[in-house]
Length: 286
Ligand SMILES: NC(=O)c1ccc[n+]([C@@H]2O[C@H](COP(=O)([O-])OP(=O)(O)OC[C@H]3O[C@@H](n4cnc5c(N)ncnc54)[C@H](OP(=O)(O)O)[C@@H]3O)[C@@H](O)[C@H]2O)c1
Image 1 (tube, rainbow, N blue to C red):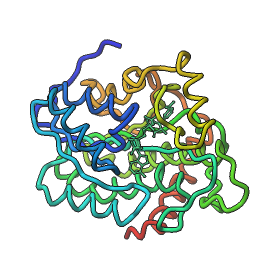
Image 2 (tube, rainbow, N blue to C red):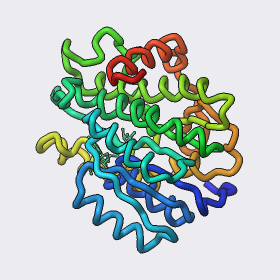
Image 3 (cartoon, rainbow, N blue to C red):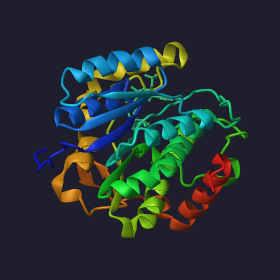
Image 4 (cartoon, rainbow, N blue to C red):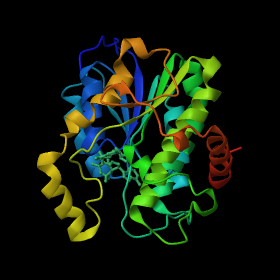
């Protein structure tokens, strides 16, 4: 899609999940547009290799922060490292995500999908809000998914999925969490010149779910011809980041670079407010 792109020179951006798939293509798109990029990756070797690859296209050095986003201590350390750098933050893209076919717990004793896909977005963003507010105008983008339609609510009484574990239900709820978080945060940022939007990237051929044994590897391989490339999958993230005309647009959900109307349960602002309170408790956020 053709649109007027804003000048990203001097714009400081932070992106999670940059080592693969949609995140890697998003990182490439941002540095090509002149942005000053910091990436958060859990694997130092992969992160360093990516910094080298990105730096070949970048006007400014790309910075790496190593953190496992399933660990709240790591998220706090990563946020502190960014805050200590003294850089402003004009664009935060929460992109890292997982799909697990069996239940796993994080070091904090939280179900892994919910921890990485929702709580990490929530905690990292909240910890960085002081610098984002100082740097405004700023944008926050949450990579959600159309998989939110697999469920009809967050299941707030079992966020840890200790009842029956169903992959699509747990993943769908984590992605519904991204949308509800976007809506609540957007309201809270209304008077601060900070926009918050989320998106569905489409069905994209990436590494998502490939850690889940043979089927996890085989399915994406078989589906690859029918799926988008990571570059196509990054188009809506980049649109929300770069489009000039979106400077005042907030609280919306996009797919194919167009706003899409959400199902009623993803517009449930009472559930969004409740999810915020529970997420704050689960992450020890004041
Ligand atoms: N692919 C699709 O069809 C699709 C559709 C809808 C929404 N999405 C969403 O798009 C986003 C990107 O996914 P993708 O498809 O590009 O998948 P991907 O290729 O598997 O990339 C996921 C990224 O997240 C990182 N990550 C995972 N767990 C992490 C952790 N604990 N700490 C730090 N980083 C972690 C991965 O790091 P490593 O490289 O170290 O594994 C990788 O960089 C996700 O939020 C996903 O839910 C994808």
